[in-house]
Length: 207
Image (cartoon, rainbow, N blue to C red; front, side):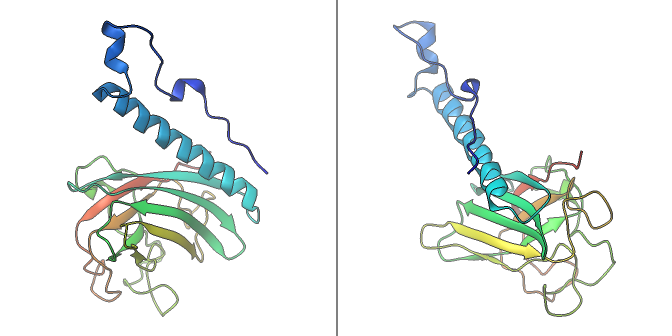
């Protein structure tokens, strides 16, 4: 079992009494921001711990999905190499209840644009047409749609064959994971008509 230690500085500071220090109280805006940052840090560390405890792969990392295109979609994902390919697990939150969404590896590890257009197109080192994973020609970054439950939360557990965290032409490190507003139809070119990019997270570059 792997235990993730969360640094004390990840949590909002405690203050006694009144005065300026009260600005960082749990009920204040600053306090709420600090609490959200702490939860994100904790979630990322726990995902990394989960990756390491799963075994079966030589590399593991975590990706934090941030909202884009004016959405409130976020998520935490764990990535690890396995004998079958790159396994991606975790959850995506803030989706419309009972909805489906395109989910892909994109070529550039840059989520800086408000609409995540900075992530470029789908990861496609072979120059293949867009399609469906496991059903003929497709991009290396093409994956099945994710499905939200009644709470708007999608559980993710997918393995991308032929992709790895290791450096190289088939490496996902230094690229991005993107969630789209609409489902991928697996046929429209070049990206499955999946609509705007509502969440984006960078896969850390390989050391």
